[in-house]
Image 1 (tube, rainbow, N blue to C red):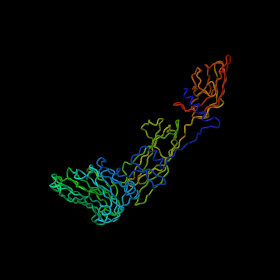
Image 2: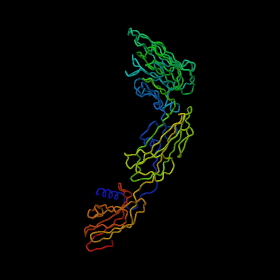
Image 3: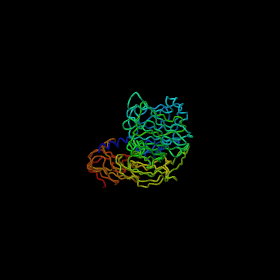
Image 4: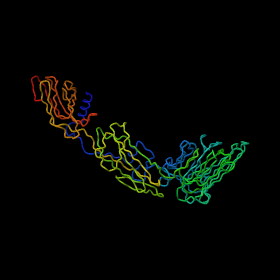
Length: 542
């Protein structure tokens, strides 16, 4: 109790009585740009992007890890092209070393299929491209023994996938090339030329595997050719995936998630024959985009037979943010409303098409949508699981109260997966639970062994009671003599109290402060000071 009284005394000294009044109006907290991103402690499937509005906004992430349904543990090579400059392109798996040609260009989110960027190939001939870097526009060489294409590695399942945006797709444009030397089983001094080639042919992609699929005894191999049946449309993104199943020898080529062709790397060329498995040669390297004109995005290799993938830009489940605990200040503050600005955004060709909205229901004609939730607590580490749905801009009445507030937003993509809602700004308007104003007209009347105190109630409607502070000097309200207990004494809601048990002849000093709630006390400023000296024989009306 003494510590509490001491704290109030310090506050009193820091905030003198003269002219010090608490505001009782509404307050607003605003989060936008970087502050919006930073306050979103939990983020799932959400990214911060520019170019949509003047400040960064939150949107669904189009990073391909959100789109593809493949196992991250099997990832052997991953090129997102999001780094902003070809010299910064890297394989995030760390298994391959990259060399980029000066002719390669990095493009931004407006042009990319997924994430924040893509690679633009400028269409030199394959021979000229390889001459520029000793291999091509973009060369990748195994630098780890864990790489799927490490020298002499006999693989099991694998998948190669990428997004392609060709300019014209002329015959012979080289998309992918793997070249290496495969040692002979009979003599380490003899080598066979090994190649994987993906090239354009009649507006389709054609894959060929030379000396790549080896018999179990290593003495023979089978060469594979496989082509798509659907034309690849220039100036449009398309997804290409080829995968191998080591259990059956199945090689399947899919375009935009649809199976285009199937062959078998078996002794019979059909299902049921002896399976020939892939073996990587020595001194091998990948060349991407030799002679290709257009863009490539999210090139990946997996050491697994990847299941079918979604070709949507944004994932069906959407994304979610949850804010950190937002401290509105001591007391049971009343949240009045949540104001929001945002909209939806999509990329058409290279143009960002956005729709802006303030408040109301954030559901758009293409079924992209955001839903908003709120919950409150008096402890930032203890929350129940109940989230209250709210409509931005609507009056929440008196149903949402507490010291700490947490907001959540669910993001849902459009029906076709090509547009995302975006969140630009959040504003919380609340009525702070300010400590009540001090009581007025405090009087003190001395009696024999006590003092009668009376005051006028605080004008604040949230006043729940009064604390009476007393002591034997004007700057010491740590009295302990009263029969009701040490200072301060809780007088409850009444505006008069008799303090007995005081020592006759001692001069006592008194102040009263109102409080708005009791767990813990939310105490306002002191009233004016009064003093009285109990004396033997004094009486007062009780």
